[in-house]
Image (cartoon, rainbow, N blue to C red):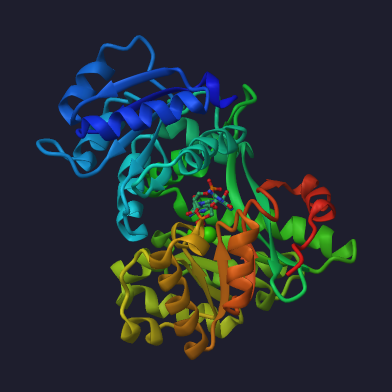
Length: 398
Ligand code: C2E
Ligand code: CA
Ligand code: CA
């Protein structure tokens, strides 16, 4: 969708700043613009619309109802398809807003620091389109637990793959398996829309097993084709409480003649920290069996050095909220630098996810990050298309 086709709302209490935003939008060709003078007014206007606008720009710091509360209402009542937060929000806080919005199927395209400029606005709005190719037609697909169970059973939940490359030489050395629900009607549902329900309904372990199994099948094919790739698979927090998980994962990889050393299990920082004691046993056993262990979404879970050092991780993945745009945002860059420093001290491999621009790539390369993952290199694709993505990829010259 071209920018000029977007319908956008500006929620900003400061009249002058609101007018600037509207003018910048006009310069970008966006002329379907709604205005909200504060949170409450914005909600009133939104509730009167026949169809929700595509993007709402929300200033966080407003008198009366603040931006976070306003986004909460927009999400719950599905009053818009996506929001952009206008504020110099730190990524951990942005992550909180994102998690809240996501639970209701609202997309957060990112945050923009004031003062608003045409370039910043354009970059944020362009993200609306970048994702839409992978979104289901209907942003929030309606389904119940029976449909999900059935989807798991009949193979509609499949693994897509996103390449990971070494900064040092640009070589593709691994892939992350990401769940996709390919529905019978041809629509595609992203994991944020169904993984939380699976976790609530006790289907998370079945999902991990299925993803691991399918990913191993693909890995075997790539290995036979002469391209040895490491495999990263996401593991739900639920698994940490499942004593049989370690033996099951071992059995699955071995049934495909794959060594656990070539498989990295990703666990989010927040899930490990919420149940550190219980999870430790499983994590230790997985390490003993040879699996790699990656701490995912690092930077959003507030773990302490003492906690981290206790857990036998082999890899640290810096959350994309800190990576995206880090070259131009000193606060993000500081978090990236500190994370790399910590990882180095603990002897962990470092992965930056959300690498979308050459500028961020270059900064991360200079800071000594090991591995990159992100749209700059390639988007997640079905296994059958991975080779094509790898062929297309060219490392940026330093
Ligand atoms: P994640 O593990 O942090 O995975 C990375 C997400 O970032 C993926 O979204 C990927 O498509 C997206 N991404 C990759 N590169 C870029 C980039 O350059 N820019 C941007 N903006 N995004 C990028 P996806 O596939 O929608 O997955 C979302 C989340 O769902 C995952 O986040 C993970 O937490 C969860 N998930 C995915 N597959 C599984 C699974 O099999 N099991 C479990 N438990 N969770 C899964
Ligand atoms: Ca992951
Ligand atoms: Ca992540």
